[in-house]
Image (cartoon, rainbow over all chains, first blue to last red; front, side):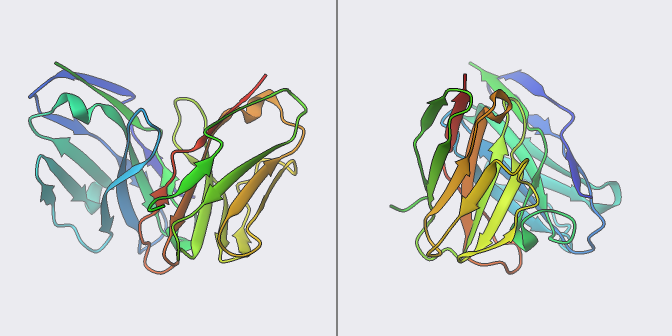
Length: 119
Length: 115
């Protein structure tokens, strides 16, 4: 079965600090995709990034960066110079199709990390 | 609308009541998913449609849960004889097609409280 572990339940930092959210996954699929979603208080899950299992290049998008390491089954997310608007719950998710519900697009989510950015 | 729309936003039910939750996916999206999110937890898969066909219902917790998408667009999740453990946020998501793990677009969810 597939599994996503986000060990950090809650992180609180002061604005402008850098913060890293950890994600470790397990899957028997050889081809899979990894995602990060943001869930603000409004409840809607907002897509941040998708990475396929063959692409281990790190990615940077503005203040956000992602570190994918297949050797350690990790897909960590870093926010640089955090801002109050970054406060939300962040979910790491995994799709692959063979061992998760919903076919190729179905997602297995971690429990989420509640990020609090204090002014 | 441009996004996935769910209604009602909030639903309070007495234990034993039946409820129906509606999802309007993004126009043209073939795939539709229902997820259940308990308080403080990540979303968990319930069921999946491709057009009007329900291809996977392995996540439905009991036979009190039933989902349909008769014309391949709007979907309804029905819960019969609600129990307190059914209290959760029910999220609907849609995607263009089941090829190559396209990203899911989520609605804001229906928060169900069973008293």
